[in-house]
Each structure stands twice: as C-alpha cells, then as structure tokens.
Image (cartoon, rainbow, N blue to C red):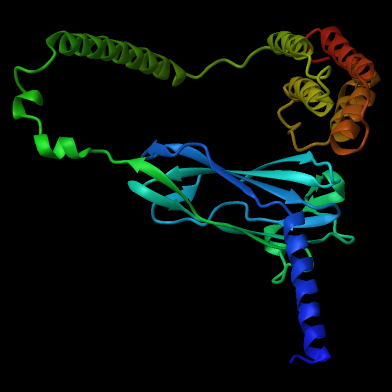
Length: 338
C-alpha cells in the first residue's frame, strides 16, 4: 500500500506534466512549406517557415541555410511579420534555394531561438513589441521561451537524362553535323555576310583614326585670347543649362564655374599656374593691370573657394548670381590682355 508521500509525489508529477502539456499547446507548431516539390537542376525554389512569436520576445534565426553538396541558399532570408490575436506576431521566413544535384535532395533544417526581449533593441521590430536579433548574437541556451527545430524537408530534382534516354542510347552527334552537309547553309551565308560588313567597317574606322592621328602630330597654333574668351562663355552657358545647381549639386556648380574662369585668366600668363590660390591669382592680376582688370572677380572666386573648401551652402538664386557675375566679367574682358 502506497504511503502519503508517494501519492503526493505522483500528484506533483502529474501537475508538472499537465503544465508542460498546456504550455506546449499554447505555442503553435511552425508551418513549413516548399514552393514546389519538383524542379530542374539549377532552378530556384523557396523554403517558407511560419513561426509564432510571443509578445516581448527576441527571436534568432540564420540568414541562410547551411550549404550542402547539392543545395545552397541563393540569397539571404526574407521576413514578413503579421500581428496575431494574442498580441504576438506570426513571423514568416522565406529562404531562396538553388539545387545543383539530382534526385530526392534533403533541404537542411535549422533552429529558431526565442528569449525574453528585455532591453535589447534588435535589428527588426515585430508586432507585439518583439524584435529580431542577429544570429551571431544568439545565446547558447534559449532561456524561458525555448528552441524550435525546423526539420529537414525534401525536394525532387529531375535528372538531365531520363531512363528512357539511356534505353534508347546516347551517342555523340555525327561529324557531318559539325562540318559537313548537315549545316544550315542560309545561316552560314548570313554569318559570312555579317563578317564581311564588320571587316569593312573596322578597316574604314582604322583608316579614319590613323588620318586623325597623323594630323595631331603637327604643332597647332596657340588660340587667341578672344577664342579662349568665347570658349569660356560657351562653357559657362552650358554649365547653367545643365541645371546641376537646381539638383542640389552646388559644390560641382561652383567648382566648374570657378575652374572655367581660372583657366581663362591663366591663359593670359603662363606663369599663373593652377597651383596659385584664387587670392594669389587675383593679386597677380591686380598688380599687373590694376583694379579695373580684377574688379569684382576676387569676391566671386572667393565665394567659390568657401563653397568648395568650407561649409557655405548658398541657395540656387545665390549660385546663379555668382555665375552671372563671373560670366559678365569674362564677357567684359573683351579677350584682350588688358
């Protein structure tokens, strides 16, 4: 006859078992599906897993499936989360996979770890105050929520050759299919015609290039200041027409506008190398030809320097005003050496 201590122990065991059973029933099992049960070699398919995530939980899962000889992930996992009636979330994991083998191939399983969130931020927020954690940060023990194992699945990869092909016999194509009477002669004629046209075009292009190359060897006359002034005016007009300042590219706008004017000014004297700052360049110009030559130019080029090397970010109106001042100066210079 059992004593009261034995009876109490049995009752305690039954209560614990009932509690564990109730807890197990409260967390739905994961749903697992494969986008197709039969594919061809090299074809993409997807493994989709649905996980119920309780409120205020941090969940960990791998970014890709473990690679095997015949299967590997084609891209990182995609996630989708929807709120559930219990205040948690239904998290759907989609793994794109590519097959390289043949026959029935196992799709690797993986683990999903869940633990109380606490004050952890996570990398993705889920409904119910839950978050997704980095797989590399997953704890060795999942804590009070637990571990969910996603079992291996299977997919059928159709062989390249079916049994009927082997029964009928697989032989290499005859030699005359490669070089002989089995050729498609209209296709051959079209290929020869295309090759002839390509050869004529290549020869013509090469002759034109050689002609221009010979012309480049002759020394060219230095352009006059008037020609350089006209070139600078066209470049400034093209810059404004590009509208890069309207797109917010003010740094490029000021860099190009000041560069155009500096190249024009430096052409007046070969000693004014691009290494000079705008202030030094304007000082040389003022020393040689007086204030008339550099009137207003140091201010405008100085503004460009602040935009390029400082934190000044003017609006579109100010940029166009600066551009207009530079163009007016080039236009008024008359292309002469002052």
